Amino acid sequence: MTVPDQPDLAEDPASDTARDLQAFLQLPEGVEPPPQLLDAFWAYEAALMSDDLAALGAFFAEGPDVMRGDANGLLVGRDRIDRFRTGRGGAPARTVTEIQVRPLTETHAYVTSVNAPDKGGRGLVTQLWERAGDSEATPGGWVIVAAHVSAPPPAMDTRIWRALGSPLVAGAAAGPLAGATVAVKDVFAVPGHRIGAGVPAYLAESRSSRLPADALALLLGAGASVAGIAQTDQFAYSIAGRNGAYGTPPNVAAPGAIPGGSSSGPASAVASGQATLGLGTDTAGSIRVPASYQGLWGLRPTHGAVSLEGALPLAPAYDTPGWLARDGRTLLEAARASLRESDQRGVDPRHAVVSARLFEAADADVRTGLAGVVDALADRGVFDSLEPIDVPAPADLFRIFRYTQSAEAARHWSEWIAAHPDALSDDIAERFAWAASVTAEDEQRALADKAIAREAIDEALGDRILLLPSASSVAPPLDASGYRLQSVREATLGLTAVAGITGRPALSVPLLELDGGPAGLCLVGPRGSDVALVETALTWVDALS
Image (cartoon, rainbow, N blue to C red; front, top):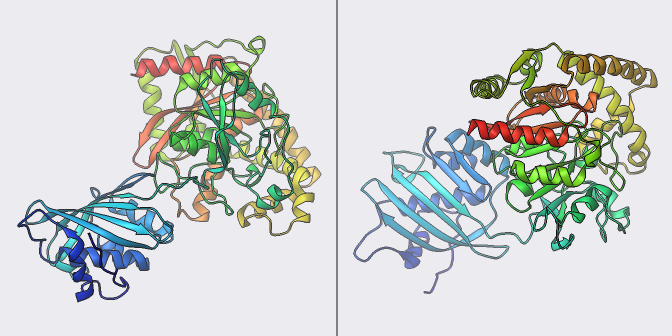
């Protein structure tokens, strides 16, 4: 088929030139395209290429039922589609090469178009159009009620990965994790590769590692192979998942929302099926938060239970390796392979505690939804007792954590940052600047308060399992305001600090799906109960199903 020259879509899409493109329009024999449908199609393409947000919005039907899907997931509802488009920054330039139209009724038509992006490859767009009535905004009143976009697959999504292999590093020939692939957060040493920590200037000065980090060596010894090195928030100093240098990894569980950080790359790789396991770190919640936002299992083990040799530090008093997986069984195998059996202890799965203060720190939908999950577990008889307890206020825990973590982060990184001005994104630079302002007296007061808080939490929990929200909200949208992100950060860190301050293991389990995305229920157990905590959660999930 000969394809005529593509018209300039910035010009009138209903021009004779555009209509001439019907030469490569495909319709069943004897069928004519519905009146003005093609005018609407070309007007939409013109708006897309010029990134005219108002026009693009008008081409989608109003209401909660309109849909748009792509490789990153499905958006349902006009509001979510508009928010996605606002944060996208325009669509790649392309040339339409073929259009297939199948009229369904007088008011509905199915349109599939093939396009050739300027960067190469072929894309496919499928749309269900509806004639909604006369409209000044759209030719013939045609609007889109459902669309699916298939872009040419990238060789590597650099928002998720810094390096990929097949595999990048092979694991042992046999073992409990044989066949598993690992997305390694870019703070761990990987043989033959450099550590970048999400900062191009740091990567440029790094040297290749000869040996794997201890936490990675354990997984390799159990048979897992390294799929690749995954992106992280800069120096792992965030729980949002955004990186100004490499972009924001997609959240397939909540399209148009942030992925959660700083183990954002490993989490997105696992959630999208590009890796079996994510090896990350958790200082402030960087395993639990992306797990909650992306519907994954995520375990922060007992502090100090897994060596951090070969991993970049942020705040050693809180840093710990951790794992992300799509299912609890895989996570259990990773924990068993990485933790010394002699250091592990059991936990009574029938005795749990909850704190109203901790639940009240979460948004209403998360608070109510997770309370319903806990009630459902109780109704199924998994508890002999579910007792309310009192713990320090989350705001106080956040303050303690913030000062003590920040002081450590500043001690480790301030000299490098001073020698590399403008190397960091604004948000991370501001965080380090605040950290540098923490005085020795501030830190000592916070450390004294930390000891008191740790003792109070230990006394309240004893050997029982604490249930609380993994994060204070579902994943905020990509275009959330700085104020919203900061308020979510503070509320979430007030929850995650329970495990950080006490050094206890904390497990996020994907047990709730809300309109805005998934939310995890967190189980905090006695120190050394890491494996038993995952086993307990698996039993509870079975009870719910």
